[in-house]
Length: 280
Image 1 (spheres, rainbow, N blue to C red):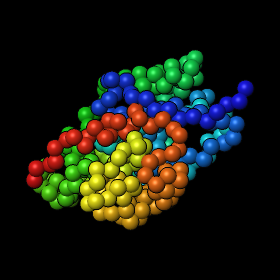
Image 2 (tube, rainbow, N blue to C red):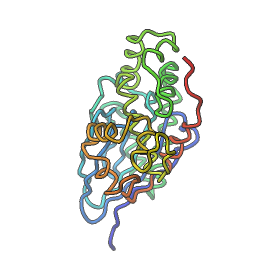
Image 3 (cartoon, rainbow, N blue to C red):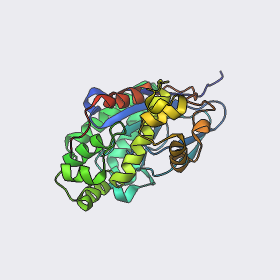
Image 4 (cartoon, rainbow, N blue to C red):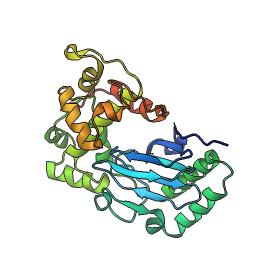
Protein backbone atom coordinates (compact mmCIF):
# COMPACT_ATOMS: atom_id res chain seq x y z
CA UNK A 1 0.00 0.00 0.00
CA UNK A 2 1.35 3.42 -0.94
CA UNK A 3 1.82 5.76 2.01
CA UNK A 4 1.14 9.45 1.28
CA UNK A 5 2.89 12.34 3.00
CA UNK A 6 0.53 14.44 5.13
CA UNK A 7 0.50 17.05 7.89
CA UNK A 8 -2.69 17.93 9.77
CA UNK A 9 -3.00 20.27 12.75
CA UNK A 10 -5.64 20.00 15.47
CA UNK A 11 -6.70 22.23 18.37
CA UNK A 12 -5.24 21.09 21.71
CA UNK A 13 -7.34 19.53 24.43
CA UNK A 14 -9.38 22.27 26.19
CA UNK A 15 -7.28 22.01 29.35
CA UNK A 16 -4.14 22.89 27.35
CA UNK A 17 -5.54 25.74 25.26
CA UNK A 18 -3.93 28.43 27.43
CA UNK A 19 -0.44 27.00 26.96
CA UNK A 20 -0.54 25.06 23.66
CA UNK A 21 -1.08 26.76 20.31
CA UNK A 22 -1.63 23.62 18.23
CA UNK A 23 -0.96 19.88 18.02
CA UNK A 24 -0.39 17.88 14.86
CA UNK A 25 0.15 14.54 13.18
CA UNK A 26 2.69 14.30 10.37
CA UNK A 27 3.19 11.23 8.19
CA UNK A 28 5.97 10.83 5.66
CA UNK A 29 5.45 8.86 2.47
CA UNK A 30 7.62 6.47 0.53
CA UNK A 31 10.58 8.87 0.61
CA UNK A 32 12.26 10.84 3.36
CA UNK A 33 10.80 14.30 3.92
CA UNK A 34 12.87 17.45 4.36
CA UNK A 35 11.22 19.46 7.13
CA UNK A 36 12.06 23.13 7.65
CA UNK A 37 11.29 24.09 11.25
CA UNK A 38 10.69 27.84 11.67
CA UNK A 39 10.80 30.18 14.65
CA UNK A 40 7.38 30.49 16.29
CA UNK A 41 8.28 32.15 19.60
CA UNK A 42 7.54 28.96 21.53
CA UNK A 43 8.98 25.51 22.13
CA UNK A 44 7.78 22.25 20.60
CA UNK A 45 7.73 18.62 21.68
CA UNK A 46 8.00 15.98 18.96
CA UNK A 47 6.88 12.41 19.55
CA UNK A 48 8.05 10.03 16.79
CA UNK A 49 5.82 6.96 17.09
CA UNK A 50 8.17 4.12 17.97
CA UNK A 51 10.99 6.56 18.80
CA UNK A 52 12.03 8.86 21.62
CA UNK A 53 10.33 12.22 22.28
CA UNK A 54 12.41 15.37 22.08
CA UNK A 55 12.04 19.03 22.90
CA UNK A 56 12.83 21.71 20.31
CA UNK A 57 13.91 24.86 22.08
CA UNK A 58 13.00 28.38 20.91
CA UNK A 59 14.36 28.88 17.39
CA UNK A 60 15.98 32.04 16.08
CA UNK A 61 16.38 30.74 12.52
CA UNK A 62 15.45 27.76 10.34
CA UNK A 63 16.34 24.23 11.39
CA UNK A 64 16.38 21.56 8.69
CA UNK A 65 15.46 17.99 9.62
CA UNK A 66 15.25 14.96 7.32
CA UNK A 67 12.40 12.77 8.56
CA UNK A 68 12.77 9.14 7.44
CA UNK A 69 10.25 7.55 5.08
CA UNK A 70 7.15 5.91 6.59
CA UNK A 71 7.47 7.86 9.84
CA UNK A 72 4.59 9.13 11.96
CA UNK A 73 5.44 12.17 14.06
CA UNK A 74 3.20 13.75 16.67
CA UNK A 75 3.83 17.35 17.69
CA UNK A 76 2.84 19.89 20.33
CA UNK A 77 3.61 23.59 19.80
CA UNK A 78 3.48 25.86 22.85
CA UNK A 79 2.61 29.53 23.06
CA UNK A 80 5.54 31.87 23.76
CA UNK A 81 6.15 32.04 27.48
CA UNK A 82 4.10 28.90 28.12
CA UNK A 83 6.26 25.80 28.35
CA UNK A 84 6.08 22.34 29.87
CA UNK A 85 7.82 21.97 33.25
CA UNK A 86 11.58 22.14 32.62
CA UNK A 87 14.63 22.01 34.90
CA UNK A 88 16.22 25.07 33.30
CA UNK A 89 15.36 28.48 31.87
CA UNK A 90 14.56 28.73 28.18
CA UNK A 91 17.53 30.98 27.49
CA UNK A 92 19.67 27.85 27.88
CA UNK A 93 17.62 25.93 25.29
CA UNK A 94 17.62 28.38 22.38
CA UNK A 95 18.18 26.60 19.04
CA UNK A 96 18.66 23.31 20.89
CA UNK A 97 17.12 19.88 20.36
CA UNK A 98 17.16 17.64 23.44
CA UNK A 99 15.83 14.23 24.29
CA UNK A 100 12.86 14.58 26.62
CA UNK A 101 14.29 11.86 28.85
CA UNK A 102 17.23 14.19 29.59
CA UNK A 103 14.74 16.76 30.92
CA UNK A 104 12.01 14.60 32.47
CA UNK A 105 13.76 11.31 33.25
CA UNK A 106 11.44 8.39 34.05
CA UNK A 107 8.37 10.51 33.26
CA UNK A 108 9.52 10.72 29.63
CA UNK A 109 10.10 6.95 29.58
CA UNK A 110 6.52 6.34 30.71
CA UNK A 111 5.26 8.75 28.07
CA UNK A 112 7.24 6.97 25.34
CA UNK A 113 5.76 3.63 26.35
CA UNK A 114 2.21 4.99 26.48
CA UNK A 115 2.49 6.59 23.03
CA UNK A 116 3.91 3.35 21.59
CA UNK A 117 1.00 1.33 23.03
CA UNK A 118 -1.70 3.60 21.58
CA UNK A 119 -3.53 1.92 18.73
CA UNK A 120 -3.62 4.92 16.36
CA UNK A 121 -1.74 8.21 15.94
CA UNK A 122 -4.88 10.05 17.04
CA UNK A 123 -5.02 8.08 20.30
CA UNK A 124 -1.28 8.53 20.76
CA UNK A 125 -1.61 12.32 20.39
CA UNK A 126 -4.43 12.36 22.92
CA UNK A 127 -2.30 10.26 25.28
CA UNK A 128 0.61 12.70 24.95
CA UNK A 129 -1.65 15.65 25.75
CA UNK A 130 -3.12 13.87 28.77
CA UNK A 131 0.44 13.36 30.03
CA UNK A 132 1.15 17.08 29.61
CA UNK A 133 -2.01 17.94 31.53
CA UNK A 134 -0.78 15.77 34.38
CA UNK A 135 2.66 17.44 34.32
CA UNK A 136 1.11 20.91 34.44
CA UNK A 137 -0.89 20.17 37.60
CA UNK A 138 2.26 20.48 39.70
CA UNK A 139 4.02 23.09 37.56
CA UNK A 140 5.06 26.56 38.66
CA UNK A 141 2.76 29.22 37.21
CA UNK A 142 4.09 31.09 34.21
CA UNK A 143 5.28 34.68 34.63
CA UNK A 144 2.08 36.76 34.24
CA UNK A 145 3.95 39.89 33.11
CA UNK A 146 5.63 37.94 30.31
CA UNK A 147 2.19 36.67 29.33
CA UNK A 148 0.96 40.27 29.07
CA UNK A 149 4.07 41.19 27.08
CA UNK A 150 3.44 38.37 24.59
CA UNK A 151 -0.13 39.58 24.01
CA UNK A 152 1.10 43.14 23.45
CA UNK A 153 3.83 42.02 21.02
CA UNK A 154 1.43 40.33 18.62
CA UNK A 155 1.85 41.88 15.16
CA UNK A 156 -1.45 43.65 14.64
CA UNK A 157 -0.82 46.72 16.83
CA UNK A 158 2.93 47.51 16.87
CA UNK A 159 4.24 48.81 20.19
CA UNK A 160 7.65 50.11 21.21
CA UNK A 161 9.60 47.95 23.65
CA UNK A 162 10.29 50.90 25.95
CA UNK A 163 6.60 51.81 26.04
CA UNK A 164 5.68 48.19 26.75
CA UNK A 165 8.16 47.98 29.64
CA UNK A 166 6.78 51.18 31.15
CA UNK A 167 3.21 49.87 30.79
CA UNK A 168 4.23 46.76 32.75
CA UNK A 169 6.00 48.89 35.38
CA UNK A 170 9.35 47.34 34.45
CA UNK A 171 12.60 48.76 33.17
CA UNK A 172 13.61 47.73 29.65
CA UNK A 173 16.38 45.57 31.11
CA UNK A 174 13.97 43.87 33.51
CA UNK A 175 11.57 43.08 30.68
CA UNK A 176 14.40 41.66 28.60
CA UNK A 177 15.66 39.51 31.48
CA UNK A 178 12.22 38.10 32.21
CA UNK A 179 11.60 37.36 28.53
CA UNK A 180 14.95 35.57 28.21
CA UNK A 181 14.06 33.46 31.22
CA UNK A 182 10.50 32.56 30.16
CA UNK A 183 10.62 32.76 26.34
CA UNK A 184 14.29 32.25 25.51
CA UNK A 185 14.70 35.45 23.49
CA UNK A 186 14.40 39.16 24.21
CA UNK A 187 11.19 41.12 23.51
CA UNK A 188 12.48 42.64 20.27
CA UNK A 189 13.37 39.25 18.79
CA UNK A 190 10.04 37.87 19.96
CA UNK A 191 8.20 40.79 18.35
CA UNK A 192 9.92 40.14 15.01
CA UNK A 193 9.13 36.43 15.25
CA UNK A 194 5.45 37.05 16.01
CA UNK A 195 5.20 39.58 13.20
CA UNK A 196 6.44 36.97 10.75
CA UNK A 197 4.06 34.39 12.23
CA UNK A 198 1.31 36.91 11.59
CA UNK A 199 2.21 37.16 7.92
CA UNK A 200 2.43 33.37 7.67
CA UNK A 201 -0.99 32.97 9.30
CA UNK A 202 -2.50 35.40 6.79
CA UNK A 203 -0.92 33.51 3.90
CA UNK A 204 -1.98 30.10 5.25
CA UNK A 205 -5.54 31.35 5.66
CA UNK A 206 -5.59 32.72 2.10
CA UNK A 207 -6.54 36.10 3.57
CA UNK A 208 -7.25 39.08 1.37
CA UNK A 209 -5.17 42.17 2.10
CA UNK A 210 -7.07 45.07 3.65
CA UNK A 211 -5.65 47.49 1.09
CA UNK A 212 -3.96 49.76 3.60
CA UNK A 213 -1.46 52.05 1.88
CA UNK A 214 -3.05 51.00 -1.41
CA UNK A 215 -1.23 47.66 -1.34
CA UNK A 216 -2.67 44.27 -2.26
CA UNK A 217 -1.31 40.74 -2.73
CA UNK A 218 1.85 39.93 -0.81
CA UNK A 219 2.67 43.62 -0.34
CA UNK A 220 -0.72 44.10 1.28
CA UNK A 221 -0.32 41.12 3.59
CA UNK A 222 3.11 42.43 4.56
CA UNK A 223 1.62 45.78 5.60
CA UNK A 224 -1.26 44.06 7.43
CA UNK A 225 1.25 42.02 9.44
CA UNK A 226 3.15 45.14 10.48
CA UNK A 227 5.97 45.34 7.93
CA UNK A 228 6.92 48.65 6.34
CA UNK A 229 6.62 47.14 2.86
CA UNK A 230 7.18 43.96 0.86
CA UNK A 231 10.96 44.43 0.81
CA UNK A 232 10.98 44.56 4.61
CA UNK A 233 9.04 41.29 4.69
CA UNK A 234 11.46 39.73 2.21
CA UNK A 235 14.50 40.52 4.34
CA UNK A 236 12.90 39.17 7.50
CA UNK A 237 11.64 36.04 5.73
CA UNK A 238 15.15 35.16 4.54
CA UNK A 239 16.54 35.88 8.01
CA UNK A 240 14.00 33.65 9.80
CA UNK A 241 13.44 30.87 7.24
CA UNK A 242 16.39 30.90 4.83
CA UNK A 243 13.98 31.31 1.90
CA UNK A 244 12.26 34.12 0.04
CA UNK A 245 8.51 34.48 0.71
CA UNK A 246 7.64 33.04 -2.71
CA UNK A 247 9.77 29.94 -2.18
CA UNK A 248 8.52 29.49 1.38
CA UNK A 249 4.90 29.62 0.22
CA UNK A 250 5.47 27.00 -2.47
CA UNK A 251 5.73 29.34 -5.44
CA UNK A 252 2.67 31.44 -4.63
CA UNK A 253 2.80 35.21 -4.34
CA UNK A 254 0.37 35.81 -1.48
CA UNK A 255 -0.88 32.51 -0.06
CA UNK A 256 0.57 29.25 1.19
CA UNK A 257 0.54 26.45 -1.40
CA UNK A 258 2.21 23.71 0.66
CA UNK A 259 -0.97 21.60 0.79
CA UNK A 260 -0.79 21.02 4.54
CA UNK A 261 -3.65 21.67 6.97
CA UNK A 262 -2.70 24.56 9.28
CA UNK A 263 -6.09 25.97 10.27
CA UNK A 264 -5.91 24.86 13.91
CA UNK A 265 -2.82 27.06 14.23
CA UNK A 266 -3.71 30.13 12.20
CA UNK A 267 -7.38 30.55 13.17
CA UNK A 268 -6.73 31.35 16.87
CA UNK A 269 -3.63 33.36 15.94
CA UNK A 270 -5.62 35.55 13.55
CA UNK A 271 -8.33 35.94 16.20
CA UNK A 272 -5.90 38.09 18.18
CA UNK A 273 -6.26 40.78 15.49
CA UNK A 274 -9.47 41.82 17.23
CA UNK A 275 -7.76 42.72 20.48
CA UNK A 276 -7.56 46.45 21.21
CA UNK A 277 -4.08 48.00 20.94
CA UNK A 278 -2.01 48.54 24.06
CA UNK A 279 -2.72 51.94 25.67
CA UNK A 280 0.60 53.56 26.60
